[in-house]
Image 1 (tube, protein in one colour):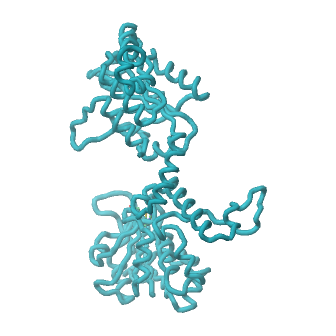
Image 2 (cartoon, rainbow, N blue to C red):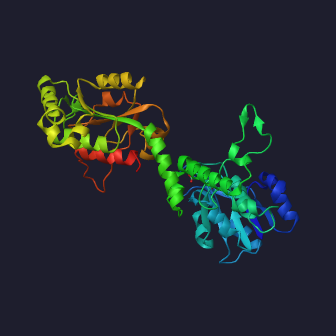
Length: 427
Ligand SMILES: C[S@@+](CC[C@H](N)C(=O)[O-])C[C@H]1O[C@@H](n2cnc3c(N)ncnc32)[C@H](O)[C@@H]1O
C-alpha cells in the first residue's frame, strides 16, 4: 500500500519512521511519502490566504494542494482523505476498509482549514479523529495512517492480536495483565491463572461488556449480543441502578407566573398521583411536594392519607405503594434536609427549565453521573411558568430543556417529569 500525505509541515511526521510504521515500510508492506504543499505553490509563502466572507485565520488555497496531488499521480476516482474536525468520526471500520486500498492520498489541513473545492473536486472523505480542535491535520493524518497500516497483512508479528482488540467485535477490550503476579499489593485476577481457556474467555467477554457499558454504552446498540451477553448487561444495570439514587421535587413556591412574577400555585390531584406512580415505577426514593400554603398542605395530607391509610389503601394497594413515597414539605431546603437525614449527605440538586441557559447538562451526561455516583440526586420541577431564576441559581446542575419539534413547548409538569426521568433512568 502507498500513502501520500500532503502537509505544510513535513517535519512533524518524524514519528512515522519509528516502531511498527518503520518496520512496515522496511518490509515493503507500506510506502509512506510526505509532500510539502508549499513546493507546489507559485510562491511558497502563498499556500494559504484569507477567508472569503470574512473571519479569522487563513485557509489553504486549492491550487497548490491540487497541483501537489496531481504531481504525485492523483487521478479522478482515487481515494482521497481530508482531515477535518468537521468530518465524519474516523472509526476502526474505516481503518479496516482503507487498509484494503492500494493507494491513499491524505491531506493535512492547517490554520483554519482547506478550501472546500478540494473536497468537491476529489470526492474526498473528510474525517475527524475526535471532538476537539487541533492546530493542524498532521497528528490526525498520522493517527489514521497508523491505524490503517497496522492492519496490513504481515505488519504485526502476531495477527491474533488484531482479532482480540478493542472495537473488533464492537466492544472495548478487557483489562490485561503481565508479570509480576503481585505489584504494589495488587494481584492479577485469580481467574487468569487458572489455565482453563474457556473460563478465561468467559471472564474476558464479561469484562469487555462491563467496560463498554461503563465507558461507551453507545457501542452496545450497534452489535449483536448473545442471550448470555444480554443477561450480563441486565445484571450490570441492576447493580448500577441500586446505586442510582434519586428523588423528585415538585415546587409550588417559588415559581413564576406568565408575566415573570414570583407566585405560589395550587396543588393538582393529577400531579400527585401520576408523579407518585412514575416515581415508584422508576425507583425514585421519594417524591416531595413543595407547598408552604397551610390549607394546600392539609389538602395534600388528606389525599395522601386516603390512599395510604384510608379506604383507598384497601381498595388499591398498588396506589398505596406509590403514595407511600410522597411527602409534602414547606420548602426545597426542607426536602434537602430530609434527604440528608436519610442519606447522610445533601443531595445533588438538578433544576429543570423549559428555557435554555448557559452551562446546562445533557441527559446522557447526567444519567452516567447518577449511575456511577454514590450521592443522591434531587430532580427539581416547577409548576406554573417554571422555577424562578433565583432558585435555579442554587442548583448544582440545570438540565437541558425538553424540545419538541416546533415553536410550541408547553408540556404539563407531569409529562415533563415522565420524559426527564425516562431519559435519565435507562431501562
Ligand atoms: C485549527 S483546525 C481548523 C478548524 C476549523 N476551522 C473548524 O472549526 O472546523 C486546522 C486543521 O487541523 C486539522 N484538525 C484539527 N482538529 C482535527 C480533528 N479533531 N480531526 C481531524 N483533523 C483535525 C484539520 O486538518 C484542520 O483543517
